[in-house]
Image 1 (cartoon, rainbow, N blue to C red):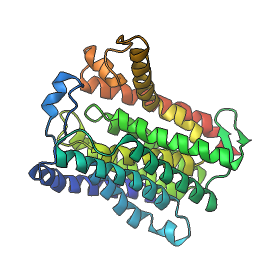
Image 2 (image 1 turned 90 degrees about the vertical axis):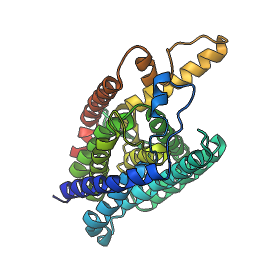
Image 3 (image 1 turned 45 degrees about the vertical axis):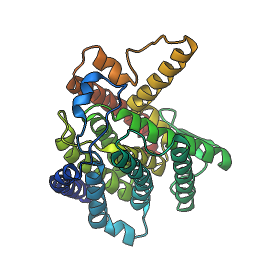
Image 4 (image 1 turned 135 degrees about the vertical axis):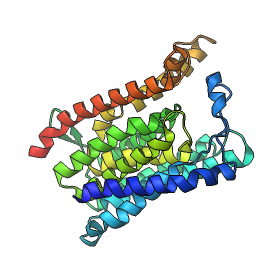
Length: 328
């Protein structure tokens, strides 16, 4: 019941905050600067309010403080840890967004600055989870239902790589109205179900609030978007997804639940690498992958629907892969 309450509170608060936040951002002229190298028709989005991720961050926080308070009293801080971890990334994104809005350029923090901040947050979070017993230096292998012991230092390197990679992959997916929101909703549902079945109520509360907040944000973010989440929202999303995967100690499941995030990232890497090696030739019409399909005639709504459906299928497959652990 508390899980449902958490989702409803986050939905209601996020929706209400959006009613106030969007006009306020518009009045401040906190509009998104669209990259010149993107699809030409995206230029019509220029000036759409950004930093809208603040609305679901607020909704999740209120939900945690209300629905998740009993878990904190009982000494189960996992949900709060994941929120704070995601919030660090959201804070990095907020500063990035602020710089973009202030100077009216699609540039904020440099790549090395982002990487170092993200890496530090990932390492600290990994140590914190181990200290409080949420994970150990073992990797659970879905479907095989076995765990593989890994030296702690090696595990930390792996965790930092996966967390930072996940965060930036989610950020890269945020390029079409509603896409990052829609793709992440099945992922949040997957973690909610897993957390409940596995007895991690505090993480179930967070992931349910995560789902509810995103559902409310989608009302404003679906095509044609009235607001963008900005790096504030997309980096928070990535932090939440990575945090839940490691909080539940099933990071390898990210391969399936994050199939779209991975495809988007690989398409970008492949495009850039091939372009450099062949001195100007391309594999995709445009990268990342959602732009490739847009350039092929897909509407933003179709990209949203297909990518979300693929993610939902990946989440279902991932669930089947970890079911054996519930019975263990």
